[in-house]
Each structure stands twice: as structure tokens, then as C-alpha cells.
Amino acid sequence: MPVVPAPMASSTANWHWKNKNVTRWSKEWFERELVTLSVTDNKGQVVSVSDVTDVVGDVELGQRKSKYVSSWIRLPRN
Image 1 (cartoon, rainbow, N blue to C red):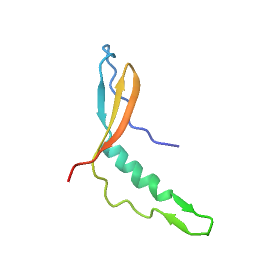
Image 2: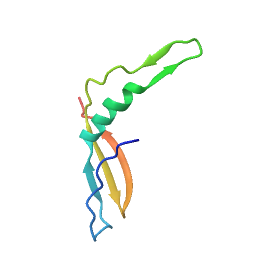
Image 3: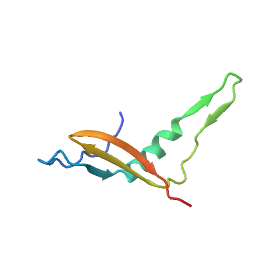
Image 4: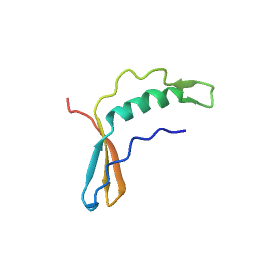
């Protein structure tokens, strides 16, 4: 069963944007779920993720009018 981040705090002013940082939750999800992936091509070659060593950037979940709007990763510029 998928684990989801805790809901955002409710507000009587639901017409405004709310953002929640879900970076820690996302990092845990990547570490748990990505290692279960593997892809096999038609020649029998397999590609898989064995370990997630680093997650760079921020993940935020936006909400407006009680609807989740977007989730994205903002990577730092070099």
C-alpha cells in the first residue's frame, strides 16, 4: 500500500495557495520504490536501480481551492 504525506492544514480561506515541502517524504519514497524497478529489453538485457545514494533539490506539493495542483523538483543551478 502506498504511503502518502500527511495532509495540509485546512483553512477557511481555501482560495489561497498553500505549499508543503515534501522533500523528506519524497527521498524516502525514492529510496523505497526505485530499488524495486527493473526493465528488460527484447534481447534479455536488464537495467535496474540497486541503490539511491543522493537526492538533490526540493519537492513541494501545492494546493489551491482544496485541490492538489502540482508537485515538482527544483534542482539547484550549478
